[in-house]
Image (cartoon, rainbow, N blue to C red):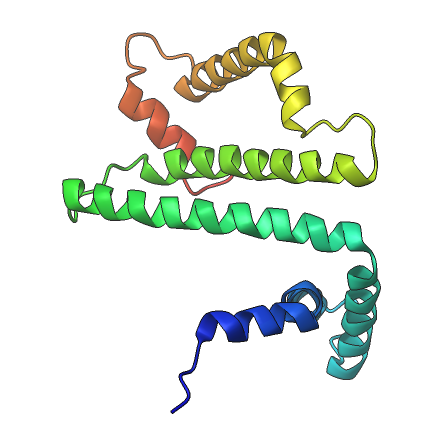
Length: 186
């Protein structure tokens, strides 16, 4: 009686290029097709959007650097998603139905930091293919952190001061966070 071995099947798929060619092609095609359909750049005609998306996807998978960049970015994105879901579960257990009003703003800041981190990981990989200085590489951030951190702190304080509206003795942290997380445009 034969036993099905899933690891062996995955190794076979990897050897024929499912993970290096087919999945990146499908992902690039889906993203570009969705963007073309949503923006209606080509008048929203599905056939034309599909041909353009397929052409771009084929051209993208030919370049080995793009495959490597996508692999690094998606690996790190999956790690971030797992950590984010775990964090949301823990915070849900702690807060229950009552979550702080500033949660959306804090989540946005964390998402932006994670996005920069993933770009740094991709930039480190990208330098293997095209050497040069990359603003998002972790090496660049490590070398320039002494002047970046003070600028970020100054920007944060400027946002808090602007959001407080210059009112005397009434600028509490709650009011500032509400001003930063409001739905209306500035």
